[in-house]
Length: 420
Image (cartoon, rainbow, N blue to C red; front, top):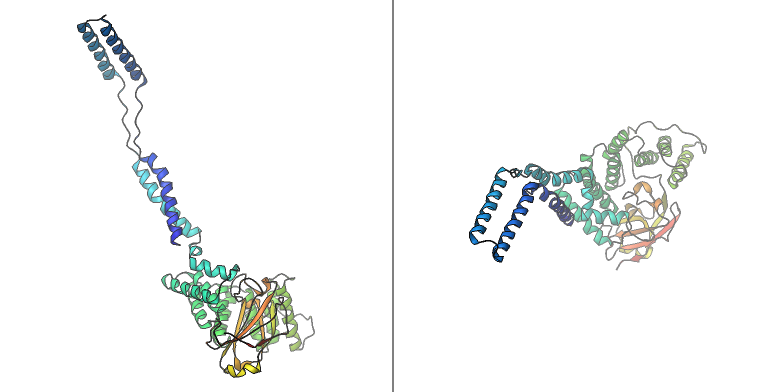
């Protein structure tokens, strides 16, 4: 960021160096052409008189008399000729205006029309790692996120920064800290459906995958701001599904189908969830259900679903059961099979819940564009974290699946390797 401003200052100074000198330079009027021509003639006459004096054609008295006559003419010529044009004052007001307004207008224009936040090296590093496939270790990512958090303490009005911090915290499994970041973003953008949906999702994860209470109110606010917001509809539909209110769940999911491409993997997954809900509701397959018109009045329940997903079962190798306590945290995440190792979706449970049937989907995306459906293949990773953090630590127990395509189901992930 500092280098950017230094370069901008140098470029501005260079522009001023070209613009100001012509404005400040005093203009000198050109002498009268006739006077200049006569002066040349008189100079030639003086030179001829000197030559005649040297040849002896003129006496010294004659030379002096003729010279005085020429000098008299020169004086008379300048006295009666056109006076020298007044030298105009340089336009200093214009120069001052240019010197002040050029950098001011350039700076204001960039601030209003450009993207100053994008020049922040911390933001560039975090977004690059999350969305552009840069290789980065969990430790490096954690350090970058802490730097971003520290910068936001100095620039608390940066809504985009708080959103990025919330997504980064969520991807790292730091749901309590993600909630705090999203709370800041929601204060700055109270009508932003993206922020409200992500806030509700993170808050649900922080309170044990339950959307009861405040998360439910956030969903209602998100749908009031944007009735067709896909992630919010997915959350609301899954909440109703988990409450066994299958018809309401189908209504929300059918609203998603109206705003996404019919041939997308996401649409296929949503249709699968709708058919499952119809079966459980006792309706015939393919039946049409009335589309929900408004967000539910009752509180919602847990995590989002209905997106391009991978699903299966996670278990702990019995031989290592003694290495884990029932309250130890288990992270289950999907990441690209190659390239960046940033999570595409993540959920958190405890050892006491094992074996656990999981489902990771696009509605749990950690960053824009970084989704399960955007990958050709993904890997599901499960890890018992003794420290309760997503970063692997010595003594954690880990397992992972083979690379699979989005939409794969029936995966079996056994945690059987101790991290050393």
